Each structure stands twice: as C-alpha cells, then as structure tokens.
Length: 237
Image 1: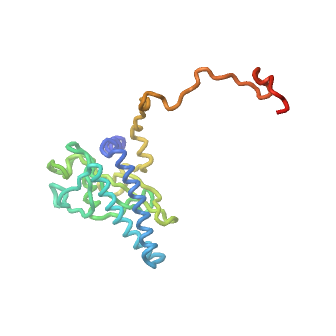
Image 2: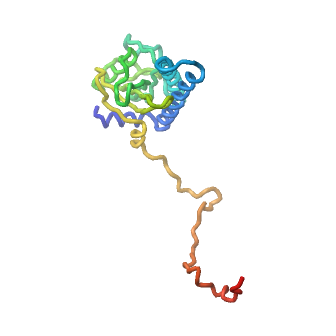
Image 3: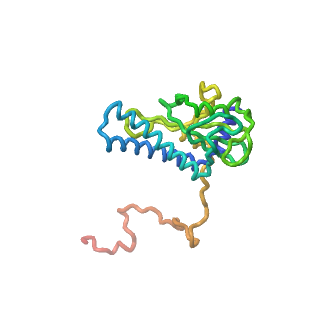
C-alpha cells in the first residue's frame, strides 16, 4: 500500500468532523491538565511538569475515547487483538464497519514528527501494518479488528515554552518494525484532503435574497455640482 493509498484509507474512514473534535478535545484536555496542577498543587519545575504530563495523557485518553464513541468508533473487545494472544492496555477505537478500516490509538510525541515511546499496546498495534496487507486471521464482528485494518495514531506534542498548549497535533502510521512513519500529516494539512463542506445556493426562507443590488444605480456626481432641485436653495443656509 502506497503513501497515497494509506492517506486515502484514512480520509475515507475517519470523518473530517471526527478529526476536528479530536483536535478540540486534545487542546482542551491539555489546558485542563495544566490548570489542574497549577491551581491545586504547590509543585514547581520538574515535579510539576511530570505530574502535568501524566494528567495530560490520562485526560486526553478519556477525551479521545469519548469523541471516538460519539462518532461511531467501537472499542475492541477483551483488550486482546482477536485471533492472537497479544494484549493491549490503551483504548483502541475501530472505524470502518464491515470493510477494511482503521484501528485508531492515541500517543504523545517527544517533539513534532518524532516517534512516540514504544509500549506494549503500540507494538501490538503496529503488527497490523506488516506490509499493510492482511496478516492476522481475524474474525468479523463489531468492535473487532478486521483483516486489512491499519493501525493509525492520533499524535500530539506539547509546547515546552507555553504551559497547557500543544505544539503539534497529527495523524501518523508507524511501520511494523517501529522504525519510522509510513504516513504523517498534521491535522491541519490532512484537512486539505477532505472535500470542502457543501455550500447552499438556495435562497433564504421566504424566497427573498439577503442582499439585493440596485437595478439602476445612479451615476456619480461630484459634490460641487448641485442637483437641479438644489439650485434654488438659499446659499446662505
């Protein structure tokens, strides 16, 4: 599967509104974590940043799952990749119905475009990306991975210079050996791949347009040239 085909799968499977809501939730949860530590502890420096990092990920993980479920995502059942004995410990949300789709996870990056830290869940997830072809004998059913699914991460990197802010939010696909991204786009750049929302050309209710143009606009007349009706006015007024 080429980079263009991966991008096409993501765009066809993950709706534009889903990505916008995930972006909004990520930014809101990052602010929430910062304010939680700032306003409710007396920690400073490294201790404050460490606690904020843990709080940020857990809050964002909850927001991630809530948004995905609201947009029809199904959490895999049993915390084991079907057909294997591979366990995962983070919410993996599946999109795609009965067709080959997307298994979506959440991860933080040390910096923009840097691979997130390896953990057991992500290492299990990227096994789906082995040559990006069906390699697992999986059964169908809602909330279960399908042959042909790809593992995609919703990624974020914090802004080290501004508390509670994110430096970059992106969507990425990591290769099965966990050595690099097969596809990486910021959410803003990925938005360009979606068709623009349709704009209505229908007239407003009542049949009257909101703005009308004069059918016979008056010709411009210099202010020093009086109208014929004004020629009889008293010049002293």
